[in-house]
Length: 613
Ligand code: AGP
Image (cartoon, rainbow, N blue to C red; front, top):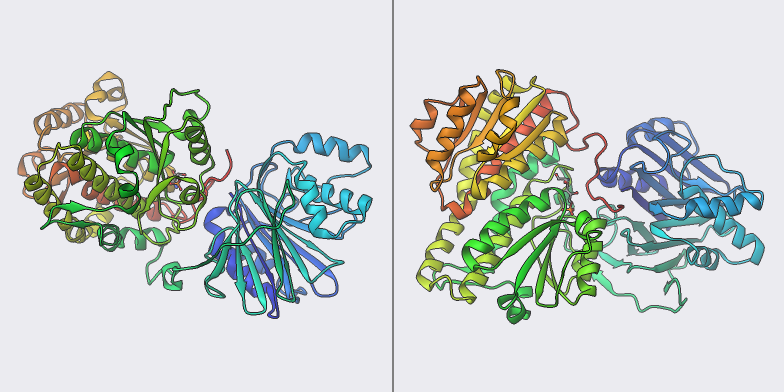
């Protein structure tokens, strides 16, 4: 899921492109490149990070007030200088950057090779710039029309920006499935995969809709058309609410650590104005609009990927417990191809931090085809899932830059908790007095997380003890089983240690065979309802010499007498324990990864939003 950025205006483009690519680097960091025009076309691209590109362009001609840039997450063709973007047409006239996958590139390539085109890279993208070149030359078309016509022949996902050296006062951009934002500045335009490179230049943006193409010109004029029908579209200009500070590390070594420490505030922001404990109410804008459909839904289908799927799993426990409504939690990638049974009495809840995850988007489209109501739970404002869902709620966690999701997870769980409480109340399963009690306890969660964050040093110490193990097991029961999965995912994705999360009781049905003195076992023991069961699980692990790291409620001396390491967290209602018990797991994975010298914010092979299948 690459990051693309482009600039057209009066300022020098190069520094703006580089800053933009650094902001987008969480989307992919296999290679980076820029193309600039200053009477001549200069293309610079390099395997590795944006910094490698910066070093490579030192002493080179990087002048010009028009340019395009790219940071890559490799799909077709390995990370190297040749496969890096931008890609150039054979006549050297056109350059293009692309985020997405051209699914029919092989067919197009074969046809173009028959017409004498030769290709330098293994990428699908290079085929696209040759196709535009072919149509432009054959039909003598202006760049905008050549790009549009070419895209009518393309199958797949794309966000692209194209520059034509014979028309250096114009940039052409288009999108289908992959996100693209147009920033309208004073005498300048910025185009980018998301708003982060645009915010410091202008707050006026247009989120391109699917299958739209934009042509922007140096004289300040621009037009947006739909690709297939070639009709002019009325642009919907939005004001960005994002603040630049939110994109800085704020003195932390890594965005992930900053985002872990932001959670007391982000959870409070997620609750603000949406609940009142004294009066015992919860109000979620999107939910109010579709109350009847939600309250009378026959089933909730939750679709998501990765960490968002774990939040969905916590929600399954919450909705069934509080609202007595059947819930199924689906991996979006499986759901969309499984031919699932969906009816218009179902409500589909789509959970996504980025709001751009391709599989979740496709699952939404499928649900809509069957008439189900789609409720989006999203962090990124203006993202595709937010715009394509029938209704929804933002979690207000602010930009999440670290690839490993942390504050978005607790934001999603907080939002889903409020939704479950609201539905439970509306369906008559929660009397007002209990609602008030639970809301008072939920209101305490941000301050309790402040307390949990005080275990940071202890987590750093335990991490130094277990950082060299090659495997780890995470165990939890009930609401904390999904948290065990989430803890394992965090460790896997940033420290590259193989880890698995399991329902604690499931351990005896296989994973216990893995346990010996080299297996750290992180056990979440905060559930009152299954306390004795968890104690037995710890004894089973200790009987096989496993190293036990136990997350316990404050003052729990019983487990302290059995475990090798104990991390205490404040007590809360069992319903809300995932919001507290996940924090030490985030910190453990963070410190272990740092101690193993891993790039915590940009782990290998990963990207922040997965916009291709
Ligand atoms: C989590 O740390 C990962 N970044 C990844 O699993 C992520 O949760 C998944 O790709 C889903 O992303 P989304 O929430 O933006 O849809």
